[in-house]
Amino acid sequence: MLPLDKLASLARRYRELEDMLCRAEIVSDRQQFQRLSKERSELEPITAAYQRLLELEKKIADDEAALQDPELRELAQMELPELHTEQATLEADIQLLLLPRDPNDDKNVILEIRGGEGGEEACLFAADLFKMYAKYAENRGWKLEVMSLSEASAGGYKEVVAMVSGRQGQPGVYSALRFESGGHRVQRVPATEAQGRIHTSAATVAVLPEAEEVDVHIDEAKDLEISIAASGGPGGQGVNTTNSAVQILHKPSGIIVKCQDERSQIKNKAKALKVLRSRLFDIEREKQDAATAAERRGMVSTGERSMKVRTYNYPQNRVTDHRIKLTLNKLERIVAGDLDEIVSALQSYRQAELLHAAGLGDGPKRAGEADDD
Picture 1 (cartoon, rainbow, N blue to C red):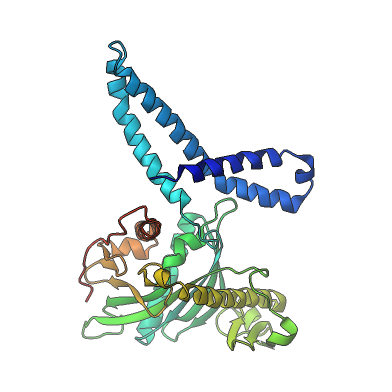
Picture 2: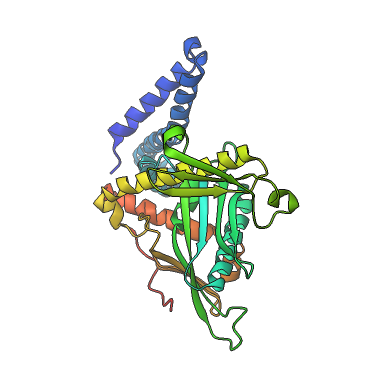
């Protein structure tokens, strides 16, 4: 049952905002104009859906009355099934629009991938995961910028940290990638395996919403210890011989961030601070999540990075997401960046969780049990 009083109230607020945004004193105040414009844009989809629902209800009532008129009965009988179908679809859409939005959904993200158990093969897998996300970002029109990179001797990545940014006017990077956090494992024959035995290796993925300065306060003079060194690793002579690598120690938390991707100390410091803010912001978010027991019980909503979230089984061309028991037999396409089906399924599962918590649904259903060993 839709909360019609709440929908009517939101529609009134939308009309108020439209009137306010036409006033000269609002237009001249840039900060207030932007704040009210953002609120208006957030209310626009649900207001439009509510107005369409009212139109449908009136049309349905008119057609039901027309059933009593011999001249209009046939036309009404033809229209009513389509109107009822559209009404049911619209009510479901409105339920989703009423769900509380995560304030981080439209943020850019810091993507961190690290090789785990499995030695060099785990580092190679970490590099494969990075390439998968890079291709996915390219397909979505997002910008991916490497912030720090530590290569392994066999060519994989011990660790890679990157910023993923959405296009102007089309945010939602965190909304799409948030459920990638966790332990990923691969089952395949490593290139170094002479006897063709299948090995299982692992890597961890962390997706952190980019934190702004207003989200996390850092007293650079008191909280930070900043050191400069010559950059190392790949990048050519210019990188290797320039004292541009920046390492930041956040003394209150003990977190250390290093960035050496740029030749400029200033740019590397700015990037390192972005990563540091996002890690501190994520720690604070996890504290808040831990205080909400129901939220932490959800298999998708949990942010625990030690949790095994997905297995990539190369011999069987199979990818399994263990949280929703989704198995797809198109591993090659997925590791080439075709993540849309997985992302959509995880988002739908999360929406079903929220609807159930709000008393508007029966709860999410997993795709089915899968043997991932």
